[in-house]
Amino acid sequence: MGRARLKLRAPRGRGERLAAAAVVAAAGWMLARTAAVLGNAALRAWPVTTTLLAAALAYGVWRMARAAARRRTRAALLARLRITLEEFDAMDDRQFEYALRDLLIRDGFHARQVGRAGDQGADVIAEHPRLGRLVVQAKHTTVGARVGSHVMYQVKGTAGPVHHADTAVVVTNGHITRDAKTWETHHRIYWIDRDRLGQWAHDGIPLHHLLRLPARRRGHRRATRLV
Image 1: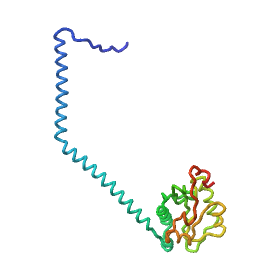
Image 2: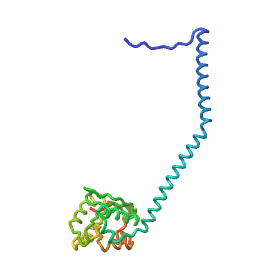
Image 3: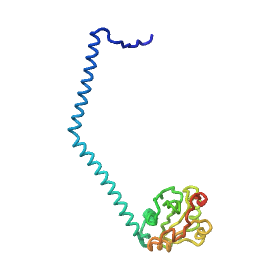
Image 4: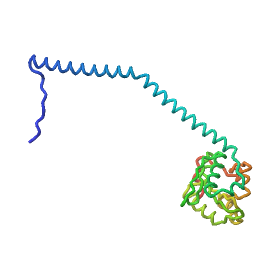
């Protein structure tokens, strides 16, 4: 059997109409009373509400101003950043990567440290509006150690296909073998050895000036990307 539906019917007779009118009037009075109570409460609470909103706004403005001040301070410090070869030699591998990141930021790149296990030949990735994406492979070594062609081969295999780099650079505080240096001319895998590192980090020569990196042509990123 189907469920019975409740059907409303219009009031019949004078008595029912008067009763319905009374219910409607009572409901209207209750709504008006509730609105009046809420309105009075809002009027009494507005100084507190206004104070809380003003305090929240002031705190937000203070936080934004503080963050902006920190960014300006960091930018000013990085603009004057100079690192000696002796300081590089005293670093560990991770400190070396962060130092290279900061130097790239100083030179106008948006850079981040990404080196970790399985990084596939990228320790720092940087972006530049004119130079495109740059991938850095950092090789922190003991003084006098040499970086050979096998490192260039590894970077060549991952810089373009994996990291979509326009430019790849191997940076070491040691030396680069003669065979490895030829990769700059033949494969566009650039290198920074101990001598170039001193010019970049201590003398303040921007990396792209030191390596004479070509500017990226608009609309031709894929054509110039390392492959």
